[in-house]
Each structure stands twice: as C-alpha cells, then as structure tokens.
Length: 495
Picture 1 (spheres, one colour):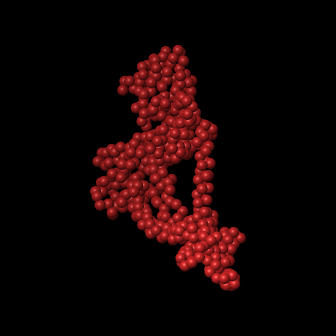
Picture 2 (cartoon, rainbow, N blue to C red):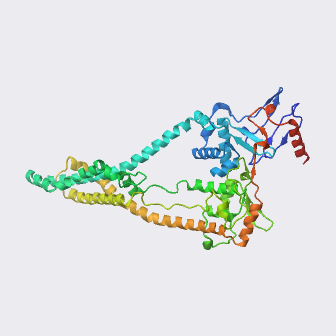
Picture 3 (cartoon, rainbow, N blue to C red):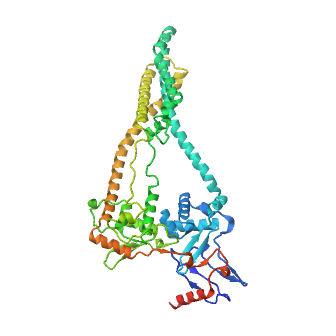
C-alpha cells in the first residue's frame, strides 16, 4: 500500500487517505503526491534532481529487456506487464520503469482501484539515447568485442599455417646444413618437393579462396575460422537460456490470470521425470524460485489443492497475450498459442565446420604434429651451434610443442565432455517433455486442479477510461470531477 496524499485545499476538502496500489509501494521519487501551496497545485514529477541519467545505473541487460517489453506492449504498462514479458524480477522491473520514466519524460497513471501504470512517449528511446552517453558508447564496445573475437579466431588458425611453415623450413635448413656445399645443393634438390609445401598452403588459403568458398557453410565460416572451431568449438548454444526460461514462465502465468499450478510450470524448470521422482509426488519445492522472482504465494482451494497466485501479474495495461485458458486436455496446445509447451535446450555441437573442413583441419594439425616431432629429434642430434632460422625455431620450440599437442588434446577433452553434457541435456529435455505431456492428457485429480486454477484467475486489463489521476497534467487540468473524488473517498472511508 502506497500513500497517495492530497493536502487540504479549498477545492479538495477531504482529509488525507490511502489508496490501495498494486505491485507494492511506490518509492519516494515516484510517489504521486499533490501539494497545494499559496493557491497553486503542483503536479508530481518523476524527474530527479542533479540531472543524472538514472537508466545508466541499471544493468544493460535489465534495461534492454525492459525497453523491449515496453515497445511490445505499446508504451503503456504495469510493473507486472514488464516483469512477465521480460522475465525480470518484480523489483528489477519496477526500478527499470522508474529510471526510464525519469529519463524520457514518462508519466504515471492511477486507476480508480489504485493500480499504477507507466506511460512512455513514442520517441522515448531517442530521448534516452540523447541523454545517455553509455548507450551511445555500448554499440562501439560491442563492435570492438566482436572484432577482438574474430581476430582471436583468425589468429589461431593463422598460427597453424605459420607453425607448419616454420617447422618444415627449419627441418630443411637443418638437413641442408649437415653436409658440404655440394651435398647441400643435392639435398636441396632432393627435398625440393617439401620446400613447396608452404607455398602450396598459402596458395590454398589465398589464391585458391574461390575454391575454398564453395565448401564453406552457409553461415560464412572461413577455413581459417574453422581451425578455431575445430579446437575450441563455437560457444554455448544455450546462451541466454535463463532469460528465455523466465520469459516463458512470466508470460504463461500472466496469460493464465496469475493463478497456476506447480504442474503447469514444471515443463519450464529443471525437474526430474515423473518416473524418476523418488520423493513424494506432492513435493513442489521446485516452484520456490518462481515465487521469489514474481512475488507469488500459495493458496488452497475448496478441494484442498495447492495453487499459486501472483498478484503482480494479474493487472495489465495491454490486451496482448491474453488468450483464454478455460480448459485443458487435447486442446491445450491450441489455447496456449505463442507459448512453447516446454523449454527445450539445444545440444552442444563439436564444431560448426562441415565434414570436409574438419578433415582438412585435422590433416594439417597432424602434419604440424609430425613435423614438430621430427624437428625435436633433429635439434637433439645437432652438434654445431645453430644460427639464423634454426636458432629462432629452437627458441620457439617449446611453444611449437604446446601448440601441436593442444591442437588435438583440447578437442579430445571437449568431445568427452560434450558426450556427458549432451546426455544431461537430453535427460532434462525428456523430463520436461513428459511433464508437458501430463498436461495434454491429465488424470482426473490433475484436471480438477487445473480447472480450479482457471476459475480463480483474475486477469484485469486496465483501460484508459478507468484512469482517475495522471502525473502528465496539472491537477486542475485533469479529466475528472472533484465530486467523483469525494464520492470515492467517502466510500473508502465508510468501508
């Protein structure tokens, strides 16, 4: 409950009262208080002193997700709208909306029931970008990170070619230096075919680029990049999984009127399969993180079923995503259009390079490893003091050994690890899918529980006609009559 104070004035004769405000209390900077001083009535404001950009204090991820939710919902939202759409905690959504409104000229609306809405102008993104230096710099930083990551991938692949060239050129130099000048010339001719190897490699990578492009993947991975992909892979395919999980859960709860069962949320959480559940089937402790994030609480219906209510997600300023959920069974998937039946994780790929590229990378890696072994034996057998190229290669030889050995050790370790990781992912996906199947054909007790949750749903769309106060205009200019305020407050006072 947030105090909504109206100071005594000739036009507002009633004493201060409290309106019931949904989604928790409004913090001091956003509390819509109206004061009358020297005959002037001041409208509350979301602007903060000091000219600080409040949005810059938010984590970039929270800010961007909140803004995407505001855009999707049309610029007029409740805290619950943003929390459910963006998958944010209630407190995070509230802080984000307050900061965005303070920086972009947004304003508050209060309904007759005390529900608080945030309204943003259409050009709020442009206004925010004009104020926030951080938002102008972030795209440049992101591009720099992408360029750095690309440079690392290309450098690792180029290092393979450089290692092969250095190793085999040094081998040739050692063999040539072990004879007199005449023998050295004959040896050079006898090993002439080997000396063309570096040239052939560069011809393939550069002059033969048109032929190489025909075997590249559709995503545009070059051969040099495929070397890095073979050794280190291509990153986590489930990056952003938690964000997607909470978006699904928030949207599902909101679309079902803010009252759900634990069985409905199980397909989006990491829960054991029904057959693997060793403890009591009534154990619903996995729902606790959802209750904490969206400020829900359990309740018991007339039949003794435990349901979960999320008051913050029951009030909305948008009719989007409000499809009916009045019954379940074979039509469950139809009724929940736009929301996936269960959360599915993607398995890890060893490499996104195609089979031909992987074979060529492995061949070059093997060629480099073989050359390093030969070079090591030759360096041990040398009786004269090395110089020039041979001395340079001898100094780098420990690094050449590490590179050649890790070129196959890292992929082997990754392959073993990915087998276990993908088995765990498949097990979790199967468990969530089985939980979703239970909702398609629920047993009688579960059906009654689901229908009870639908009966208790209370999704309320707040229309502009229900707004009785706004911070957009001065109090005397707002579109309501003082008599209506008196009637409402007297009714609240009598109650």
